[in-house]
Length: 414
Length: 85
Figure 1 (spheres, rainbow over the protein chains, first blue to last red):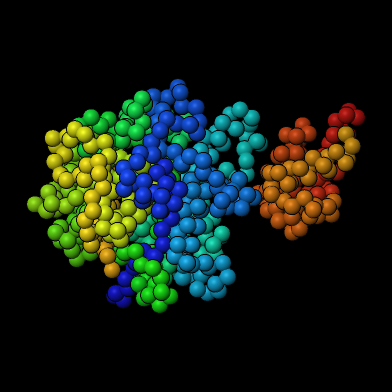
Figure 2: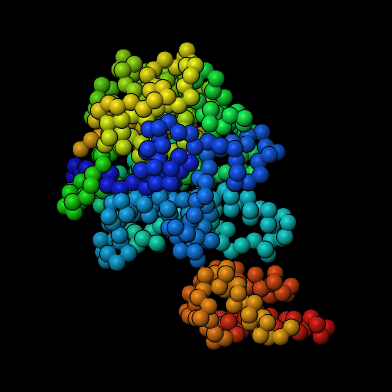
């Protein structure tokens, strides 16, 4: 094939820990939790009353007022992160001519505009079918976020959407990199967004029994690999990376953060929410990503784990890392930044990719906070509670989704 | 209700809900061309007018509305008819 290489040249994120990549990274290294009692709506009657909210997000910082009111919150967050990422990369396609045909978007979302679904159903029940807003359709569709960003920034190349639950934005990055490698585009915005903090989705997720109910100690609720973990903590937010063909980036003197070198996927083929016991499904995704990168286990200096803080995930993922990495599993630092951010569902893979890219740039690994009493079945080096300065040349991030989707990505210093 | 009251009410919806600049709005302004309110926005606007004035605008009548003046006239006619009847 053409041997085209794909690098990261821009970052953007709005999440519970930070409203941009710089503050996100600083707070992550300081071990700050973004989890708190839910303020955005009345959750007092729900079994789960904690989440990672993007407090005081003002969409009009990024989006014209006229457009902002037409968007679901997940699309507003994606627009904001996309704006940051494009600015960071120094790219703008609004008056770019045919170059804009070579720039596109892949957005991942677990659900799409679920707050708009909830509001639309409330309206039809309370006020009748002729009171349902004509905007609800475009607010709900998961691909709408990528569509709106392509309109706002003139991106007229490939534009798709991945909906693979909590693996969605990891898939988005892998798929976008493949689009560039096969020469269908030179630049792709890749990432994801989720805004599912409303009565209906929180109640629904609570019913799956996958959420932490540590309502009295929000900052201690997300505790991956800890023996006292009791589920994940839902969070909202978006993360976007600008992926760019290497020669294209060099030619314009772009700042290059890292290279996307490996992408692996598998399905558990086992259960709609539970991971396949023993971890072979996830291990195969990691193995595929290593093979794709032509790397071995010893080459990976950091794993950003899926690490949700559910009883099932953390032991199974630990077993999976051992299957994929063999003896090297005990030497590679593994951390779960979800201990601080909570779980951004479809936005998680992209956010954790940003953590990997910055770990490579700065030579420091963000910690797993709240790891006070390790689960005996979780016996790897999880970088407990304090960030660690260590040179990282290559990092892997794992993302697994309801449905049994497993994705691993590998990033490398250039 | 006076026509001018409805005109002011419509203008308020256009400015506050649809982000149109107040100084651009005249009776002759077309929604889609002059005010850049797209077809979804026009549907929203007519729904808001229905709520605000307690009238019902059937789809077949809504489809013929292209200007601010026409929308004001339609609501005015509906209100007059309901008061007359």
